[in-house]
Structures are given as C-alpha cells and as structure tokens.
Length: 446
Image (cartoon, rainbow, N blue to C red):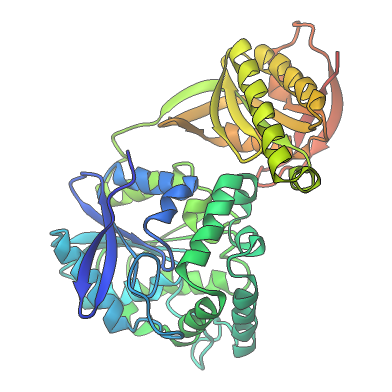
C-alpha cells in the first residue's frame, strides 16, 4: 500500500492537511498531535502502524493547524479547542464521514475527549492511548505535574527538540533502527522550531483540561498505556480516565515508548481492530518459522568521521555489496537495511550461522567490524517486512555481541546440534524488553 495523497481543506484563512487510506466499512480517525503527514511515511514503525489500522478501517489522518503540512501559526500560539474542533469537523466533512471512531494519543487526548463529548453524533467509539485528561496539578487533581516539573519539561523540549536525545527518550526501541530514528528527527524539525515546540507544549501542559467532559463520554472507550507512561504519576492519570469514563476498558502494553506505534508489531492494532469490530482483523498475518539475523557495524559513527564522507560511503557500499552476495550464496533473504546493518532471514539456522561468520570475515577484510545476533522462531510477514517476538529477540542478542562476534540464542544451538558448528558458552544475559534471562552462545571462529 503506497503512501496516500495529502489533500487540503480550507478552515477560515487556514488550510488543514489530511490523508485517507484503506477501504474498511468503518471510519477511524488517528491523531497524536505534532506530526507531518508526508514525512511520517519515512518512519517504518509508524507507517506500518497506520497500514495495519487501515486493514480494517478507512483511516483518516490530519495535521492540526500549526503543525506538519498544515498552515503555520504565530509563535507561541496553540490552536484553541474551538480551532481543533473546526479542523477535525472540516476534515470529516471533506472525506464524507458522518460518523467515525477516534484514536488519540499524547497531547491530542484532552482534545479528543472534548470533541467526543461535544459531538456524540459524529463519534462511534474512543481509544485513548498514552494520554490524560489534564497534565497539570490542580487543587482537586493532585496527580498532575507541578509547575516546576512543567518548567523543567518545557526547558528540555526547547533544548533537545530535533536532536537524537529527544528521540531516544521517547522511542528507545528506534535507536537501533537508524532510518526510522533519523526520519523521526527530521519530522520534529519540520513540525516546529525548538522555541515554537516548547511554547506549544507549555500551553498543552498548563492549559488543556478535559476532566469535565469525561462523564459525558457515552461511546465504548478503550484506554491504553505503556511502561514509560506509567512511570511516576502517569499511572494515576490513566486510572483517573478509567474511573471517570463509564464502562471504559483498560489494557496495559509492555513498552518503553511514549507512543503506541513505537513498539507495535500488530498487538495494539489487532486489539484496536477487535475492540472496534468485535473480532480480530480478517487479514491474519502470514506466520512462519525462520532464523532471524541482525548485523551492525561497530562504531560506525566514529569510523565515518575517521574516513570522511566520500571514503565512508565507498566503504559502506562495498560492505553492502558483499553482504548481499553472501546472503545470495547462503540462500538468505534480505528484509531491509538498518542504516549500517542488515535484517535478514533464513530457512535453515545452519546456513545462517555460516553466512554470519562469512559476513564477519569479509567485513574485517574491508576494515569494518560487525556484530551479529541470531534467533530462530515464529515471525509474521508484514508486506515486505517481518515482525514478531523472534525479531525483537534477535535484535537484542545482536546488541550484546562484541566486534567480530556472532551471538546466537540457545534455540539456534539446539537446532544445529550435530552439524559440526562449535559454540562458546557466554552465559545468561538480561535482554532489554525480554522477560527473564537468555542463555547466549558465540559462534567459534574456524
């Protein structure tokens, strides 16, 4: 499914950008605030998230005034509730939607709550992800952030906006996906300048308040959050939503990200699809058993600085050609590149191990040092991509490898037993995002 066309609707003197994709029987609005309708398709996790939502709905996306591809606003001006309300109504009318479900996250949460309460005839269901009814503390709302905490957050936003630090804090899982990581940074810079972003978020943190609208939410409501959101008082703010929206259903998603799309491999979107339609999406993912291999060039940034842009590009191109040659030789399938590494899969773990050792050797000959992680398990085909627990585990195993080392899970060693491949026991590791410990082994050099 290609990226949808960006279109515009006039709202007074402003223009609001929107996109529509999917042909499901029911309409679904998804919005999480500051974004860019065109550039977000460069972020593979978010693009995949949107496509999965569009598999069971007609998905409606838009940039609010003051963000992304929509009209800019004066410095420090954040759209009022009435303006946000006008933007969304104009988009719904432009696409011919008389009634839609609404899925809002982050800063869009309070605005989505207010819209649902004010326009029950236009909203059929509400999904609140990683958000709250009010961000700031109040006399009758002790669970909010204090003024000092808000000042600290705003100062951090102005300092870190559009930098690697801002993305690693919000989406720690993206750090390993260099393409998505860089695309997310570009989006922040395209949405707003650091000062503009800081002023907008000060308004969001200090002014937005949808508590009085909660008793008027009469549509089916699903509340979702993550481990990162539940830190500190955020857990209490999530509980506040559930307690004050009659019949609201709550589900926790184990992720360190501040947005649900950051770590979703289908769990969230399948859940949303079931909540809205009453059953799991019809298009079940194609599941298969495979050996997942992740490669990564060690200290690539330092090497690029050492060589300079031209020589680094030449070295990287040579490395990529050799990796692709070896994948063909050992019957592996390239899934995608990750900036300076590869994600590939193999039908047999033995061929994957031999290919991995060959990649280490040929890279060393080019003056580059790689680390490789492998695991065999069930994956899901997502178009040209693959997803699932096995992909996460292989990536985490690779992150533990040293330069010129191939690390594998116990599953791989068990499957190649008797093949003559030798391993060195590296012991138990605690892998980020993986429950318990994992026993890892290094492939012994020949």
